[in-house]
Length: 86
Image 1: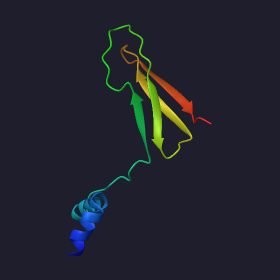
Image 2 (image 1 turned 45 degrees about the vertical axis):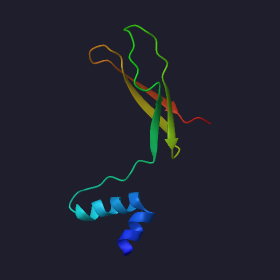
Image 3 (image 1 turned 120 degrees about the vertical axis):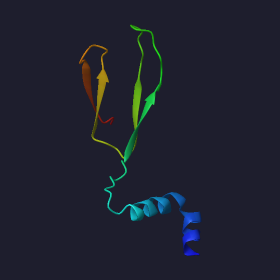
Image 4 (image 1 turned 30 degrees about the horizontal axis):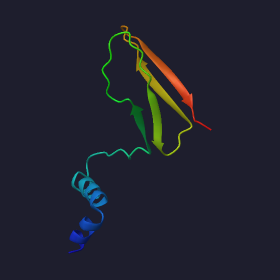
């Protein structure tokens, strides 16, 4: 009876805990405290077209954010480090 009540009141928490108990030998990473919101998301563009991309961090404040971007050239990756907005 208690299991049914817990499942009804806290479905996500209860099922997450049950999964960990059933797979006790498996290692589980803690959930991340933030997520990236990217606008425009999935967008197809013509080669050479300019696209503005906006990235916001939602959740626990971070001191800085590092983004990696493929440039379209072989082995071409550009890293961008953005400090936290004040």
